[in-house]
Image (cartoon, rainbow over the protein chains, first blue to last red):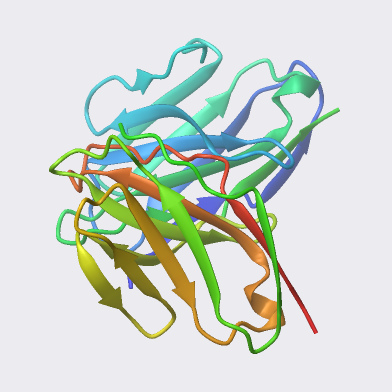
Length: 115
Length: 111
């Protein structure tokens, strides 16, 4: 089946630094990818929709200047958390849907811890 | 997007059948019903999807009544490894449409 990968799987950084998370669709092309955030014991919250070749669409309350999204190709989207703070510590998950399939495939997630 | 309502939690024992019901009263004509499973610190995994009546695959069945305002995920003979959070989602299948997650149902299976 279709596979979505994320890198890194976990990252620990100091407050004030920036962290980049990669999301790749391994065996299909995805014009659109999605980024979610999940805090402990909570559900997934959609952050933004990443569109290949154009600007991302952010959900209400998500700072676009803090969470930079780049969809450089049909198989790669990146999320950069700029000037990370402890409250940004969370589980970040990306997803994509192959045009020929109905289900949406999710990556394994990236655990971000900001000290 | 249609909002969904599920029980917060359910408990079961190994070998039992588990049925998780989801309400989606304002489901739209183009919407499909999809269920995902999530283990701690992992991304959600697709279980099953349906539009109406009944759908069955190797891991579950999905029952959808004629009015489509609810659906029931049926897990036959659960095992300890089925302990997870189960999400019911409703939306169309357009590639550019994000799935919006509700709170999900935490299923705990005991021996």
